[in-house]
Amino acid sequence: MWPTALRCGSDALGGPPNEILALDDRVYVGAKDHFFYCLMARDGRVDWRWRIGGDIVGVATSDENNVYFVAQDNVLRALNRKSGGQQWLRAAAVPAGVGVPSRWRDDSRRRPVAIASRVQDL
Picture 1 (tube, one colour):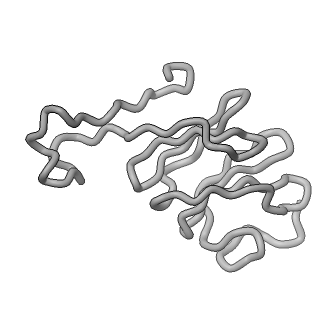
Picture 2 (picture 1 turned 180 degrees about the vertical axis):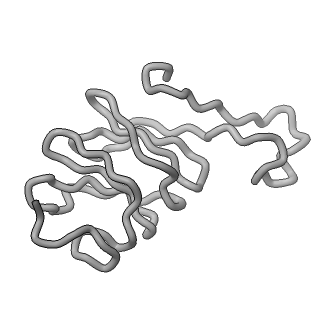
């Protein structure tokens, strides 16, 4: 497949990779360097990358146009599969009192948006 494997410090990634999503001629993967990458399946070359506020959680998913993923910054993002342009982002729901700053806990005006379990539900 590629002359070198995905690994920390390789030309492709700046940190250890997370689970990959392989689609058509591209591979999508988050890394511990707080970037989400689109690699060309043919040779492993970075097509684009997107800076995020934390490590990727789990594996990304997609539809015909976008790739979706959640990071430890508690944000769900939609990026265009081909260009890497951000289509939208949404705050992920957090169970009461878990990882939520104390100043938000009793604020009924500030509620995070729930994450759909399937892309079709968005």
